Length: 384
Length: 245
Ligand SMILES: Nc1ncnc2c1ncn2[C@@H]1O[C@H](COP(=O)(O)OP(=O)(O)OP(=O)(O)O)[C@@H](O)[C@H]1O
Ligand SMILES: [Mg+2]
Image (cartoon, rainbow over all chains, first blue to last red; front, side):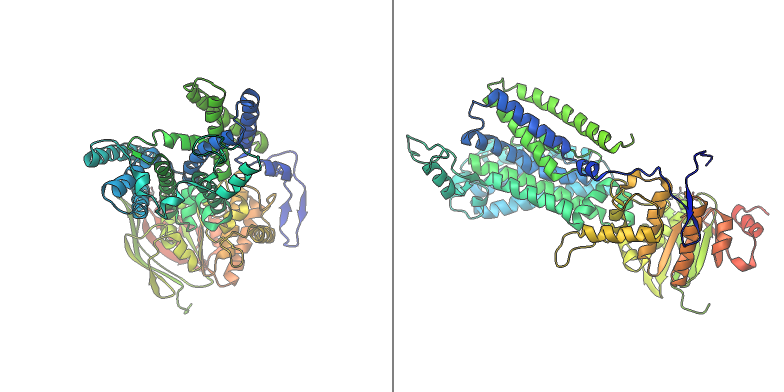
């Protein structure tokens, strides 16, 4: 080094001259606290809320019913986003999530309605099947070394086709009804439909915090019955995913597997197992989504879940995860889902043309990614 | 040296498709012994190390550890037996902080809980880099932000910290300056004192002659020979490496 400004030299007790290198970049604690994947999503969520408060503040969007409305939609996105998030951090994609949703729903319906299998058993079988397909996805990716983008794209078609074929084969149509009747009184189905804290919400209605119906069969009941199981699932999955990722050894391995699989393998991290398990977890999340939806509608349809894989990925990316893996946050993905839900329902409440939703979505996606990249560069001064 | 060899490689061979990376390689390594592995680029040195550490499985031949035949299917099994490696490409996770890299695959958990004990990992990592005089801003610094030499320092710190029986060093000082190289050589001597067996790959013959007890030469996958360092000289080794007299 022929650097003219020679660094100061001093001697340690080792007797070997050491050099204090003043060029070492010191990162202030504040900066470090700010370099979080979810920073952009936090800003985005605040912006979106302020925006809709201004343009749709008096439309009922922020009343009890309105809140329930966008909470449920956000929760739907959140459920699949948690799976996609962990998988993306582990360095892989699953484009078959949407098809998996259709598939799981149809399996539950065929088993419980057509074949008379008890609903709890139908649900367990559907979970097992979809997670096995998730594992197959993962094993194929690992064994062939092909990008998961390609492998899961193939499954997007295979599963969708199979679902429609199965449905038509057994019922001659692509929609199977009667699921809710079949699930009446089933202990496991109850976990995927209905609401909790009914009493509490009734009390809120009684004391006038939330409105009650004044007419009809539900007179006296609160307009918001309770917290939908779908929302409970979303919150549980977010908490589970967040703790798994940030507080456990396995979470650390997820980061390592996605960040630099080779390096992780060299120190003995079971990269293949981590990735395959994440494919299975993504499938699990898709199944939760599907079964909640089936229980809510009382029917399954072979075309359910269309484009859900992309919506999940969008939530994750808005949440600050890197498509290349090794970086991201479940909380960020959940905020991405919230932004997504609020925008979708906000446009509805503000009376905008519903087809504009996709325009907004695309715009938000690009803005979020630019914002995330910009914030990261700004704070870390990171290279390239 | 009449102790039982710690590591015995007998007739190891590794083939990648049509390429034979290592051909019929045999070597014994004793506790507290330093063997240097030399040879030109592509000679098969790194491949050999990866077979010992379980990253690759030999196509043929046997590996014995303390007399027991082993066949590791991945690196965690070798690590569990006290074998540590500094890989040529360092094997650090770029997006992760220094302390997580030092503990990757060996994470410390809180007492009675399956949760990471980050605080104690940071503390131990800080202590370790100070002891080994690796100059980094903090144990929480991200690997991506470190210089090549600093990264190499971290990789060496990780291996020396965990090595109980055997350490495999693949060009450990390639990115280091003069003072840093001297420090690493001191650490290697300290490991030898601790009776750890050491296999070191280096392209610097000066370093090889300073450190090793024996020198093993590879040329295009062939084992050319093993010499005792005290009984050979650079000319002989260079001739063995290049195949030119
Ligand atoms: N995973 C692999 N797949 C196919 N061929 C490989 C693989 N790893 C190594 N090789 C080949 O094996 C031979 C030996 O490679 P190796 O990395 O062991 O050399 P080396 O002695 O470490 O060289 P260098 O001094 O450059 O590090 C080379 O011809 C290389 O191309
Ligand atoms: Mg090499």
